[in-house]
Amino acid sequence: MSEQDLELREAGRLWAIRVQNPAFDDWDGYTAWLERDPAHLEAYEAALDDADWAEELYAAAPAEVVAVPQPRRNWWLPAGAVAAAAIAAVGGWSVLDRDAPAQQIATAPGEHRTIDLADGSRLALNGATRVTIDPDTPRHVVLEQGEARFDVRHDASDPFVVLSGGTRLVDAGTVFNVVQDRDMLEVAVAEGAVIYEPGPGEVRLAPGDTLKRAGKGATPVVGKANPQAIGSWASGELQYDNASLGQVARDLSRSIGRTVRPAAGAERVTVGGGTLVLRGTPDEVLARAGPLLGVRFVADGEGWTMSPTHGPPR
Image 1 (cartoon, rainbow, N blue to C red):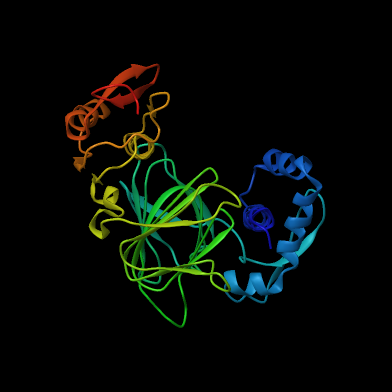
Image 2 (cartoon, rainbow, N blue to C red):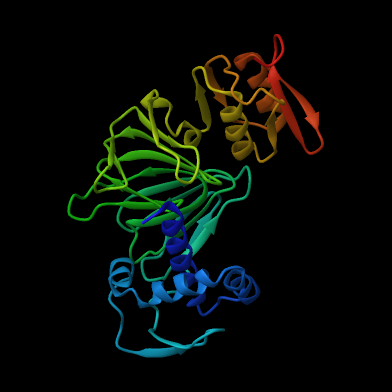
């Protein structure tokens, strides 16, 4: 199955989750998605017809059955099989109710949230992040956009699975970080192991391993990172060692909630290393970042443009 087919399948499944929610009201968005491509309706119907997927993702259905209205066709589904998750949130900490069904959870730029899953695992969401979680199947999480750090209770008999950008990531350890930025996917392992696309051609990532895929169909590139720096944003800091301005800009934008862009031609310029504390206002964070990383920031509309302190972009 191609990357495009995988992404289409996951989109169909996500709409299947949302539309069956009794509180769902985004019919305009759903209809617009269907009308953009005839393949979208096929993917949606395939999700509802896929008994293996339904059995994998959802808990056993109760005996009662209800009719759920659909814009294009009617389906009879088990009551409570798919709906919105109840989340009790205090500040940035959330606990999923095991008895509630699934929901898409999103953070605003600059907002961090920590979620305790029913299986004992913990999920930290960076700013501008969107995930879908079903409390009945807490070991299956869909990362649609943004960055998340997973602290997983390992269970070899019931692997923890992350779906992101049409890609399947299976936990074989405990702590890892995933970024989905448009078509770009990044995975980094702090502890344990993660298997990228299990099966023929799978890639097993150990502590300190990173994997970056630039876009759909691109070849994944495996690299190295300091395990202690992986997902450090979740503890209120960013750790760098010869990072590119592009990476720093993306990290800062998610963390402080304001847009930071690398100067033209400077996307791949590397900067100094160190630990940047994220405490304080955006201005205070950038004031610390400048001398630490050897960069300067120039206000640009509602955000900033970042460039190396010395010399033109190289």
